[in-house]
Image (cartoon, rainbow, N blue to C red; front, side, top):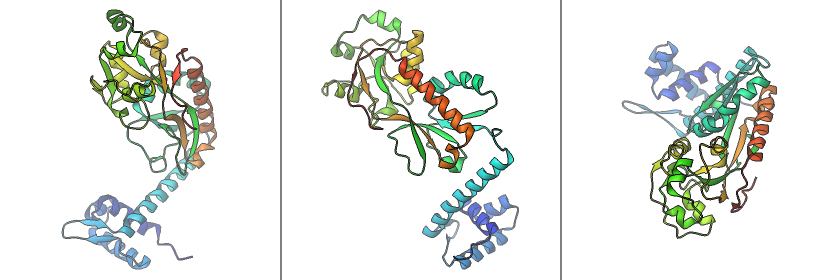
Length: 316
């Protein structure tokens, strides 16, 4: 096999590729600009392909440079992860889990005290965000993702399926009167999760009406919110009727902060999955956390109200 370039050369290249500037790379590495430029030229000569296109005032990565930058970033992330495991062996290193803000605030966090009661020796860092993070690059052990279950190169376990149903505050319902038909529901202000519209999850009003056989229903008007958490909070405050994922409104329904004014639910096309890199999925602390999450998901499903469900059950 060909001789690999030195780690130092690859590290210098990775920093220069991130900044697209030899000067900025030199400042980060505490070297001179000429030393960085010389190291990159040596690496290009060693592997036999140009890595940068040198323009008048800036640098651009060549296709070969882009491919090498991705590979080096992944390798450095793997090395960093391994060193972290050596530095904090066994159960000492925290579990890092990422998920959507709505799932973190409305499902995961209200249950975390039960995990800490069972496993006081395991520290968990929750990273909530709408951006899809690269688990390897970011050093993340586990992700709770709402999707179709296709995560190449990762270990994926079904956590729970979901469904959507109309919800509103008891006060709103009392003021508007009993709702017994879809047409009566259409007379009320509908609240929308703009992030769910057209994302394929079937979590929006248009999809709900379609699955009930009402493709003609005029359901586009109403206030819109860019997150499920804001949508549910608006419903709790009495601003209208929201279409909520049961996983996210389960606690509010059990506490009476929300009610279901029309007992029709439809299945979502997405389900919740626990996603991990294969090497992280077998770590004892991750296995324990995964088992606990699955037990909590089963408890959430078993507590679901008896509401008829329409629409197809999504595939695993």
